Length: 82
Image 1 (tube, rainbow, N blue to C red):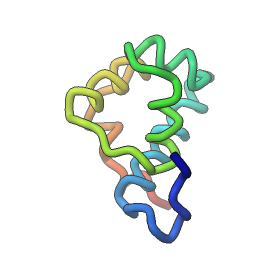
Image 2: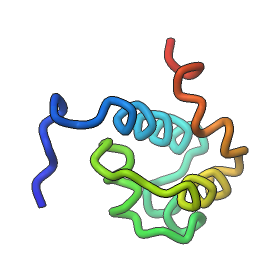
Image 3: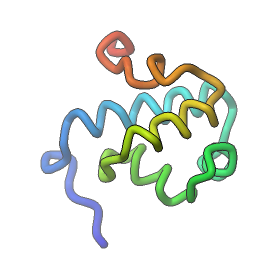
């Protein structure tokens, strides 16, 4: 499946994905290591980071746990914007 162009992606999903990528990089994790720590597939992490995948609350919790942070820190995208 082809990735939709940026202008066709949901801005909220793009912002969330960017937040996941930033926090993952800050933690020194690869997509693969975050996926393993979260119990998810690494391609799913990539789709989230690109803003092409909507995810459930349960998966938000899994990613937060994999990053070692509270879910509230992960979803606070507005505060994370400069």
